[in-house]
Length: 191
Image 1: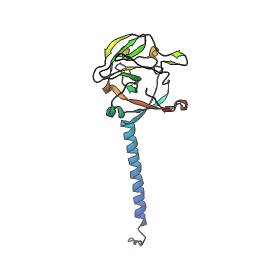
Image 2: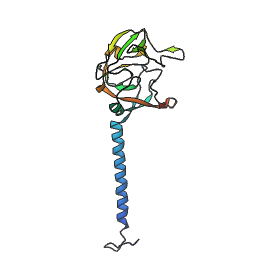
Image 3: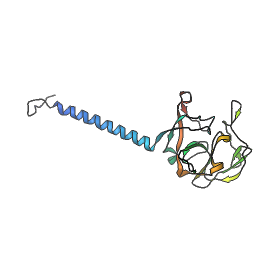
Image 4: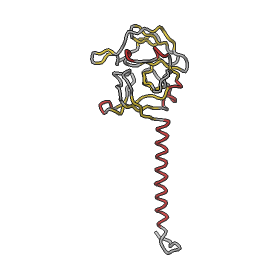
């Protein structure tokens, strides 16, 4: 490759070096912008504060929450969501979706029924410990634009039994992956 001399007689390879730095800078800026957009609009880290989702989730467990997916696919029964509660508190809640718009939710002696069918809850008893209570709830229809949520550890959960249905507009996202502690690392199963 021939090099053309510059005015001072030096080859023009310096222009290529500047172009390389410019490409690197553009790549770094685009990567930071993509990371910012992903973090702001798609995936965010959250941590569990409390015991209302035991035995599925544990206090101080770190999770990744998909903030975009449910807006495209809708919410489904069994998914774990993060939402702004309809209470005067400054923290987000994490609970399981039990009923979606149009469902009728009821509870008899702690057992959940959706549209008259018993909801299988594999987390209700783990290692001989029951996480249910003996709550009764008359049939309650989930309104359009709302979901009915419960904690897995019913005896220690403030949820839709007490504060009512949650507007879908208050949902931050779906918890889908546990990242900390290492013993909990992995995908969150949805029954």
